[in-house]
Image 1 (cartoon, protein in one colour):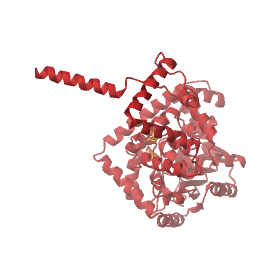
Image 2 (cartoon, rainbow, N blue to C red; image 1 turned 180 degrees about the vertical axis):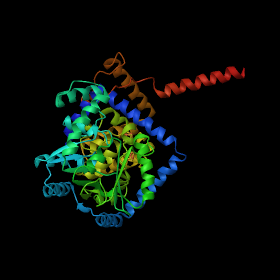
Image 3 (cartoon, rainbow, N blue to C red; image 1 turned 60 degrees about the vertical axis):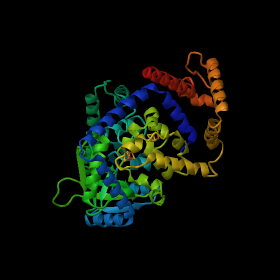
Image 4 (cartoon, helix red, strand yellow; image 1 turned 60 degrees about the horizontal axis):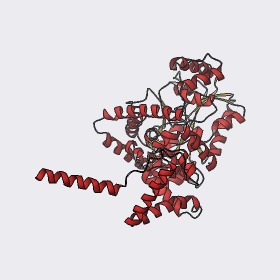
Length: 482
Ligand code: SF4
Ligand code: SF4
C-alpha cells in the first residue's frame, strides 16, 4: 500500500477545518487522558513498572526467533495450526484458503488492527464472504464505509448525533442519540451474525510462548463470542506480539490496561490455547494462528526505529498529540495514526510514504511522556526526518522549503541590527495586512499553510520588552534602596 501524498494533504486540510471533529476528538481524547492518569496514579511506582515493561519488550525482541519457534510448537501441541505470513498478500491468501477449506460464508470479526493492515475485509468481500465487525466502534465505521481513526477507539471521530443518523439510514431504525439505545440496536443486529457465522477472525494483544496461549483484551464481550461461537477461529498477530512468560504478560497487561483505559485489567480477558478440547463446551473446533511479518523483521534491524515494535497499541500517545487531536486518524492516510503511526508508517509502508506525517510533528514530546513502554517518539521522528533530508530521493523543494526558513532565521538571529530590521518590517506588513490583529490570508506559498491556522499577532520585540523589564526592576531596586 502506498500513501498518496495529495490525498493525505486533502484529508488533513478538510479535517483541520472541521470544528465538530476537533470538539469530538478533544472531548474523547481528554476522557481517555484522565482515565489513564487515574489508572497510573493508583500504582506505587508507575515509572518503575514502565521501565520493567520496556525491559521485557527488549528481552522478547532480542530473542524473538526462538520465542516464535517455541510459540509455534506449543500452539501445535495444543491442537492449533500456525501459519507464517511474510506480508499482507500472503496473510490474506492463508485466511482465504482457510475460509474456502471450511466452507465459510459468514465471518464475525473482533477488533484487529492487523486485519486493517492487510485490508482483509475487502479481500473477503471479493470472494463473496460476508464479514461483520462486532466491536461497536468498528461496526460503526464499517457501516459508514470508513476505516478506524484511532487504535483503540475506531469511531472516536463520530459524535452520537452522527451515529444516530448513520444507524437510522443504514439499519432503518428510528433516529436516536441515546447511547444505550444505539448500543441495543447494534447488539440486536450482531447477535444474529454471531449465531450464523462460520468463522471468527480476531487479532491478539499478546501470545505467551511458554504455553502457546493467545491473549485477547476487550471491554464489550464481542471477542469472546467471535472466538467461541463459530466453528473456526483464525487469529492474526504481528510477530512482535510474542512474549516469553506469564510474568512478562502480567507486567504488560497491567501497563496496557491502565494506559488504554485506566483499568487494572480488561473487562474481558480471553486466553486461548488451541481449539476446544473434548471435555470443553466452549470454543472453536479449529484454531489457526497467523504470524505476520510485513516489514517487522526489517524494523528489528533498524537501530532507532526498532523501538516502535515495543508498542502495545494502547492509544495513549494519540490522545495527547496536538496534531492528532486536530486532524484525527483519517488524515494520516493509513490504519496507524498519531505518533506511533508516523513511526510504523515510515517502516511498514514504501519508503517516503510517511514523510509528510513526520514533518507534521511539532516535537512537543507529549507522546513520549505517556508511553507505557517508554518509546521516545520525538527522538525517532527526528532521526527519520534526518534520513529524509539526507536521502537524495527526497531532497528537493519540499525539504528545502523547511530547511531554508530555519537557515535564514539562524543567519539573522546572530545579526542583531538586521534582526531588528526584519522585525520592524514584519510589524509594518502586519499593519497593512492584518489591521484588526487577525491575519485573514498569507501571500504566495504561505496561503495554504495560513488557511488552516490562526496566526498570532506580532507583538513588541522581546529585546525591547526585556530592556523595559530590566529598567523597571532597576527602578524598583533604586526606590527600595532609598
Ligand atoms: S512530539 Fe509530535 S507526535 Fe509526539 S505528541 Fe508532539 S506533535 Fe504529536
Ligand atoms: S507508542 Fe506507546 S503510547 Fe503509543 S500506542 Fe504504542 S504503547 Fe501506547
